[in-house]
Image (cartoon, rainbow, N blue to C red; front, side, top):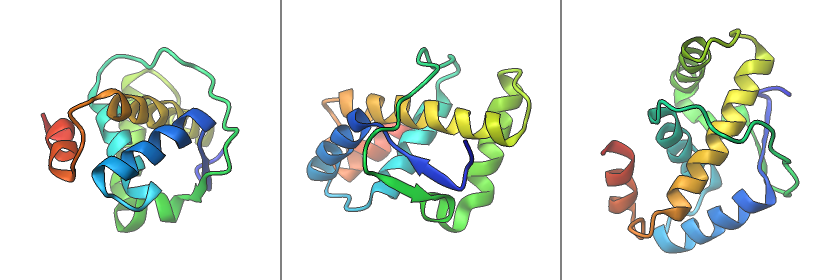
Length: 125
């Protein structure tokens, strides 16, 4: 695993399609950024340890993180350190994958997320 290419599971893909339709946000990477920070905000460890990234949705790190790549990388490094994981490529990639998927699940499962305003309110609450 590496941060170079981020792949999503089929379940996450389906959830993102619904989120795109309900919020009007057109790009996967924008929704994925929100999903990541929503999950990282939760101090618990994600229950799912391994995720099958079996969908056709993938993006490179630059597309995912955009101009704030250093911020997202710092957040991932901090989470690895907080969770007692080594801050190496494998742990960073795994942390990104499990938190991204948990965050997508959180957003998709929240019936109050129907607009961008509600998405922001969920993320900063």
